[in-house]
Image (cartoon, rainbow over all chains, first blue to last red; front, side, top):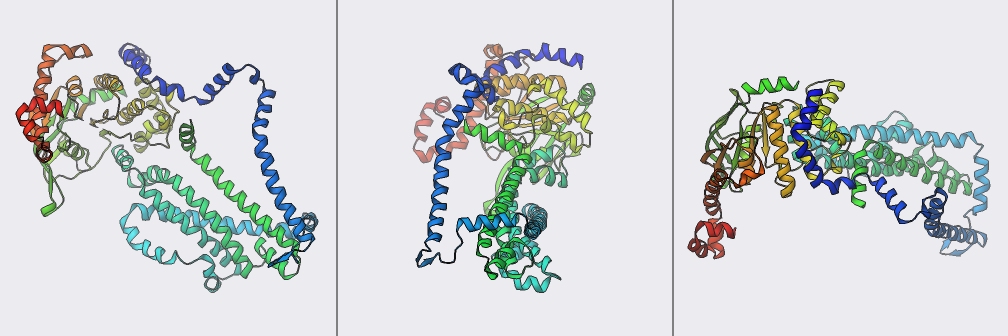
Length: 319
Length: 292
């Protein structure tokens, strides 16, 4: 090691130095935060204290915060007046609960174990259905994308089944599966499976062939190629599929719960209608929206964590 | 590890191309890319193949790498058929072929991982090699954060990491600017002298081929045949100043004449069509060379 290092100094210093010089500009750009900090400190000493920086950030963010609040405030105000005066102009607000009623019911439900259980059941169905769809969709997508035989044997079946919406499977699912619970999970699975499968196939097909050749030259086996090159190369597309799949999974789940469920937040919302607890309908809708948002956010976070190289490339693109 | 690969390289890495023929397509649509090529790379030798674009030199390299099956003839390394890609023939591509999802060091470790080397040994070997190429400071960068020259340096280091017997290089510096290219040629020469492995180098840059090679094969326009074999006896280490020496200029003139002739043949049809043919014939090959 010692000799190698000193040899390096003797032998390669000229090349190294010239290399540094010619490739300099690009390198300076790489540590971006430092460059930003340097620019800030030189531009004005006043902006360099933390308090001032936060103040500056608030000033720049304030207009957006204000317009967002205004937009939401106007929406709630419309809701409030429409329900208060029971507007009836083709659209009827006569039976719609007011914001106040919704808040009152929400306060009660906060202490209801049954309500939390409904949320838990829906989330569990999503996790299982979406989880199985992810494993199967990615695995089959890799095979279909990479191997002609797999494509010839499997793809026609999937192409035939794909246009059928998951909801259309409800009666069939009830006959196929032993319990209501499994058929609802199956519907959730179906909804997310196809977006994940198709995006994975697309991802595999768009892998740069030179990367496959490089890996083969480095001694990669067929399985190593699939796991260490094709999978990571397709990962951005796979995550697009997961994000879409998560959305469709919720759509399918809620519909399935409304039709054939016991428990679950979709069932809760439909039950509220049957029991004339109209405020609970709104709460159900809001909870569905928030849970869906959280799940999509989770997918995005997972994507960022699993694809750190993508963060670097988008930073490079923004500058 | 390094001295071992150096010793090993002295006796191995002998590439023999024997009456190779490569055809693509069938019947009427058949194209002959390589036509009856015989050549060799001796152990530890740096050999370049130069020729007009589309002459089949990349196809020839792909047969040696094991990506393309020959229609006739054979390619062997140390007596063994090169019928499939293998880690004992390292390859550097013209396009950047680093794995974007791996850091620089993990890219270099890729081949070692396929060999089943454990993480500690992989890291040690990768860091040593990156140090030699002046890239240690960038071991944790992703390829997208590097300049073109640095990416290609990592590509070379990655190909060398598995201790291949021969390095196959397909116009590796073609996408780089002129200055970076000269630096890269020096770095490559240094690495080659340190590792003493055979190199088969594809280029269409005459200066590059003279600066780097022990021997140059000139290929004809498609279908590619070997037109000439030119030994380069310039002493090593070679410096940019040598580009002004009489011997260098003589070789360069010779290569230029050979390639111009082939380029003209390759472009003959196009020139005739464009009405430039008459003009080209009047001013002769030299004039058209300028025109091109």
